[in-house]
Length: 299
Image (tube, rainbow, N blue to C red; front, side):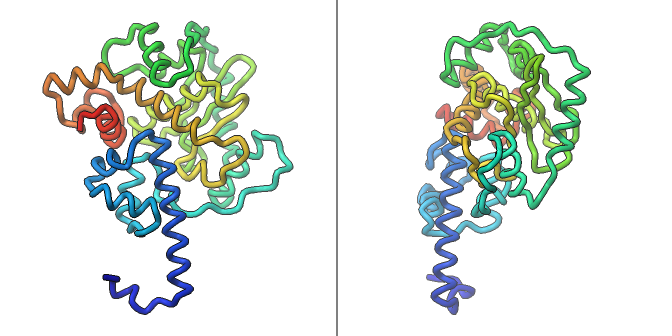
């Protein structure tokens, strides 16, 4: 039965609302698939019925603001991610500048340049580490396991910055970026790659950003420059953007920071408190741990 606020809406308003519901549903599905989880798994994380999530994704039902906030927390996206995209920019630029401008247009003209400049200046004062790890696989979970094995990482929390150094990358995660919407990026310089993560993010999310960007680097997703935004990096869908890359980078990051064997051992040893595992043991966000436990079939 429709709610009172919907009883007297016009046909055109209902059509607009329906189109919006479909668009929002598509964004929910994209974010869920990028996280590599099923509808049923996400429903469990959110404490919702699977039918509710199915209705959201199909456009049959419009999620409320509280729902979008919870979806954003669970999928590591801001509520604005789920809203329809604005038109992208013209196609007359190089891929790197086009990506930058397309994403900046989603931020109502936010200037990302100062963030990049600050990171480049800091990186110039750092010695580039020698690369000691060379992957033998491009499957994200197997790649994470290989890196953990080569580095002899046996206990959480996984030292993600040290592992990035083993891969020849410098990490800068103590700078406040010029916009809160920028979560992190990879920058290739002549003396090696630089991974940057916005220090305004909570520590657990910042660690995931570093691991996510390291995944992009090791999986050879970006030749020159790549950025990830808290606001919709995908909403402009600039040329070269691939949701499969985001899904793979997320899978790598989750497998690196929350190795399946370690998490299962902790769970079987009686440590079945997701909040404790996230904050005390693995130093990740509770949302990331919730999704990981669902993927591993532990909740």
